[in-house]
Image (cartoon, rainbow, N blue to C red; front, side, top):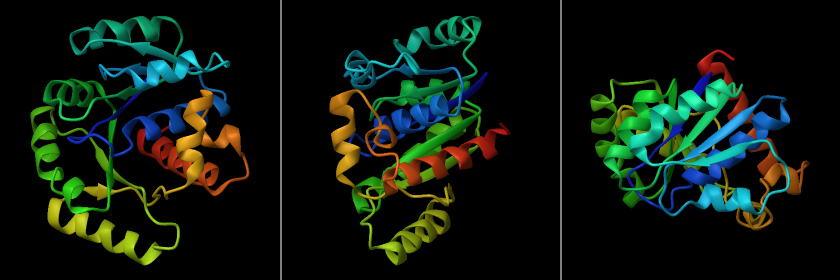
Length: 209
């Protein structure tokens, strides 16, 4: 079973959006998928309550129960799990990163988000330095040059690898969760759908799926 943790040290960076978008893309690719929601706000679990499709499964869990939850999920035949973490929770981020085959770190190209990356780097060291990639989120659709500059800054200043795929600001990212769906289910032909498919393919390549 492959495990992907989505972490960060700030709320509002898009962790749950990335988690659910990738989980749905994996389900559409025919995988048995689970999301473990470690966030006390339970956004992913609430999304599942509004959802009709069974795959992915969403399990709300406390950080202290992460290991047994992963074992139970694996015993039920899940082959890919995403771990969604709250903002500003060192313990959740560390435990999720320790359990993961790869870590994704969504950030927006603004100073308050970028300043948290030093703290994330420290957390990952404590967690054993698993493979980690920053995912740039909330990019203006016409700001390709700005996105590339932000990626270069993140790599040179904070020493993180950055995913070659970034997510743009699109209304469907906000609309889809209200329906218990992901953007590619609301509009399969949208640019958001294309972004999530590319990010999923990149993630698959990282973990060797």
